[in-house]
Length: 167
Image (cartoon, rainbow, N blue to C red; front, side, top):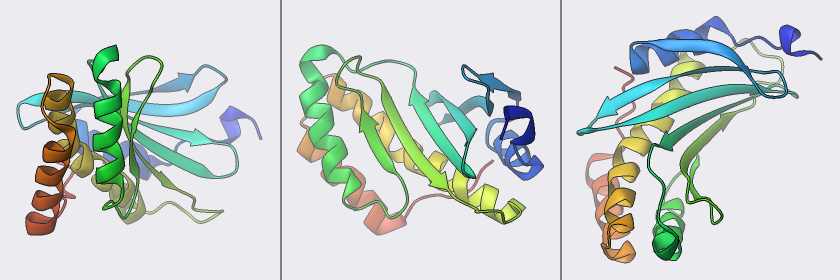
C-alpha cells in the first residue's frame, strides 16, 4: 500500500482542526501521511501530530517543545513510569537519547471507517492526557521530585478524570 492509498481520514483532519484551530496536512519522511497543529492549554503549547501507518494504524503524538535535560531524564522516566500505570489509553514517553517527551495514543480501525467519534476519541485522549502530563514533566525537568509530580497528576486524574474535549 502506498502513501497515496493510505490517506488520512477526513474525520481525523477535522478532529485535529477542532483541537488546534489550524493544521497542516502532508507527509513525513518515508511518505507517511500526517496532520499536525499546535495545542494551547493551561498556559503552555505543544505540537500534536496524527500519522497513518501501514496496516491500518493511526498514531497520535503530542510533543513537548522543550526537551528534558540530560541530568533530569532519569527523573522524567520515573515520572512517566508512575503515570503510565494509571493511563487506560496511551502512554507517556521520554527519549533517553535526546530528552524528547511524547504522549502517544493509537487506533487500529482494521478496515473500519474512522468515524468522527473514533477520531475525536483518539485525539481527545491524547490532548487531554498531554494537558495534565506535559506541565508536570516541565516541572520535573526543572527539578521537582518526579514521584510527587506523578502523584499530583494521578490525584487529578482520580478526582477530575481526563478532559476529552478537543476545543
